[in-house]
Length: 72
Image (cartoon, rainbow, N blue to C red; front, side, top):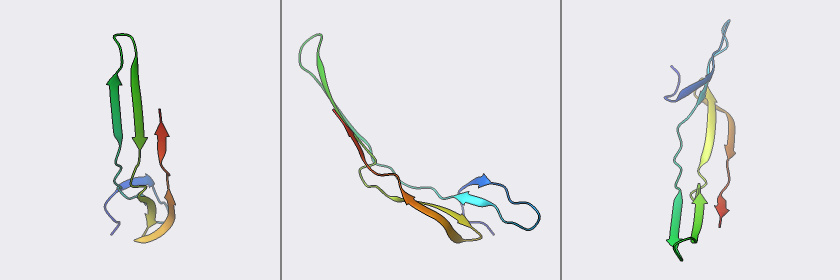
């Protein structure tokens, strides 16, 4: 039986499905109004940088980190 997750590629002729496993993502947005016409914004995306995995028959086929993003 496949692991719980979203099927990415459907297997055929005995080849099993590739399954994208769920992962957590922590994002942060801070907005501060400076004047009526001007605001300062800071964004941080994927702060935890959790590993993403794609499995086939319960074995990890591909594993990677999406990395963190920051913007001002």
